[in-house]
Image (cartoon, rainbow, N blue to C red):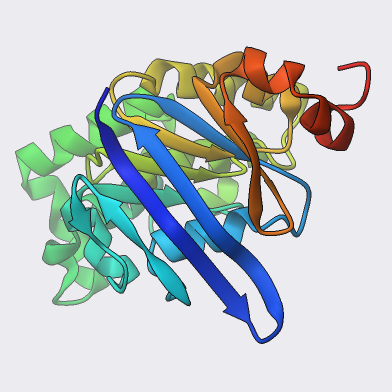
Length: 249
């Protein structure tokens, strides 16, 4: 398979702290690749280097053969990269559909958010928004303010916002964090439905989620890659089993 995302000898240091240290990562096109490790392992810092939130100390990130190190976060959607965050960030005064609209068509909002009120006059835009909301299961909440959504539905809105630009690569930062078992299962079903249609990179602490839906897993520890392989290979890795999954996992 062809790699769509690569990190080559990527490092990010904060003074003496090596948050990400000489990380090599290869994500195959169309795969779901999970990145796991304890708090402080460097997972989110790695994501931030990939998405331009942080500039790497050394090394490079490439997407579809193009070096993107140094790109700003707002430049990445046009390249086909989108990201969800641990906490949903929305415009509370806009409706659910309008929040998705801003993400899908930011060029229309350049004149100010007041122009969004005319979105329903553009049939292709309206249809695209409706399709995205249907994909995540929020069709019935299009006109609701996001503050009225239940916690699990707010997380689905985060997916809709990330999917709206039609990315080729979707980075998911702990999408099930803080969710109930029922909502976790909803998110898992959504992610499984996205597999194969998008390339997915997932940070996740819930091992049952990781082992169920991942094609490959990278394990990080103290800023470095401890191991990489299929879920079955990671389960059999003694150092991973003891450090992260428990001796009896």
